Length: 81
Image (cartoon, rainbow, N blue to C red; front, side, top):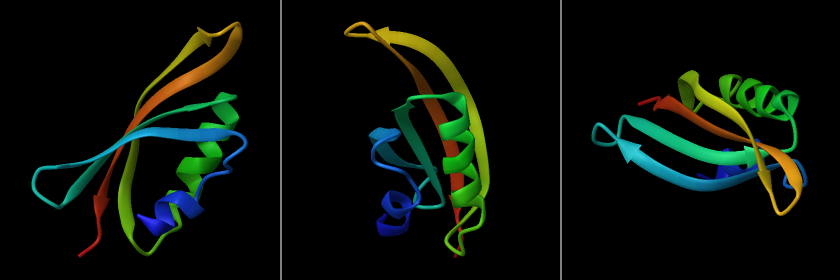
């Protein structure tokens, strides 16, 4: 989880949920970002990790929160054993 938090820019990407799926082999992450490019950068950082593989973006949706446009996203990844 420490690497997960180090992989994001806290001024551009925020995580709202991190949960294990399928036992302890997969992780589901939900969050928000300022742009889709910020999500792509976060995913690239995770893909370069020695801790995660199969990082897959499930959804990215533009939403407006308190008058600010952000992108809500969901992704999954496999924990390397």
